[in-house]
Length: 508
Image 1 (tube, rainbow, N blue to C red):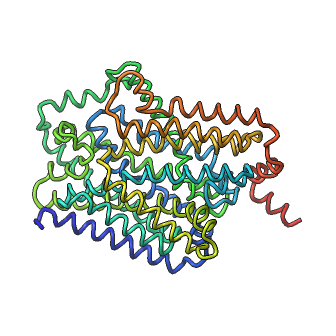
Image 2 (image 1 turned 90 degrees about the horizontal axis):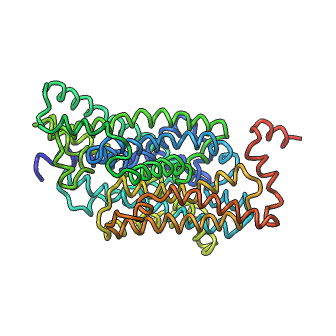
Image 3 (image 1 turned 180 degrees about the horizontal axis):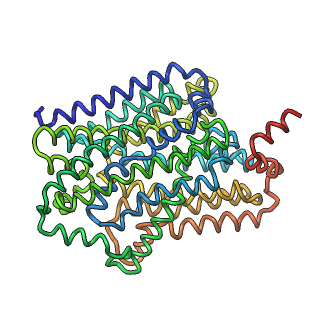
């Protein structure tokens, strides 16, 4: 191993060890099934917000945003804007009512709201598909990070992430992961902030940028959002905005964290804190993207833009200081893969444990045992796929996961919480339409290189799949009014009534 690779090896080792140590501390507090699924609904807003920030800021946020800004310019700022603003929609429409539902998972909510096992089964399938689609770029990003930082084979990073994540969620569940993800948010923020401050100082000290075309490149950042593609570029922009704004509320690993709050007001406070934490973090990737335009434009030309954050420190600062900064951003990147993979895996483990192993293999597998077996499947399947499939741009893959979430769970949650006439037939029909539409786009993106004509509709499908899903759910529900559950009014009152009123009524 070369001395140049030593900081990266140390960084990854320290992050992995710290993750396991903090997770083992949470294990001491995990005793019940509720601890494993929702940390006994006792996580305070500040800790929960840090944990959400930890799992939400994935490979796409840590590596992909800077790479997209390097390659495509300022119009890619819609990714971090949309990923942050999505929490405003979540705060206004979903956070508190979802917590008051008393569910453990999204399938729990669907069955409780609609009284339908079919709706529950459809939601279970979607949770697994969305989470695994989101997990693929985490594993692939881990391979990219270790290859760039220490020259390791691309399979080493995914394997390390898979082993560490499985050890943590299998041992302590949600209780362990909460502490781990909160730690990893602050590690990621530090890992970008300190190098960015030093790199900006180097840039100011240079006086004039070394790249001759840098000024022209930077001027490109002010070009219109539609870019050179006219209507095509404008469509992609608005479709991306819709996917990121509405997809957040449909991400299984985000939604499940709101079940861990003590009550509805705590869920709202958590969302407000999350907005602040995400806004603070997303100031930093554009700094790396802008500096990359000056010092690392060759990464865009050679198709290695996702490695910008990892390689920029050594390109700008030579010697031991550059190596240390590289080690720091490597630690942050690896923390991003671990935290997001943990959240996604625990969401899938909860669904598989409840709806597959607990249901079909009980009493041999029940409660915590079913959860742990679900955790193994949740990690191993996408790990194998990530090792077998060619690499897909991390931010692009995550963007497709947002499109699927926005096209399925967003309409279900909005209508399920705010429209009493939603029926199980309408919900299942809408989920099917949204999944087929957005899922077809995902398959096309992974297998096709075409970008002309109608292909633009599949390149970013949310602009048509989200309205189509809403329309399908409403239309089919209106055609099946006899299928509105009898308990709908009482259930919606539970979702929207203040906790103090509900407590007062229960004491009568």
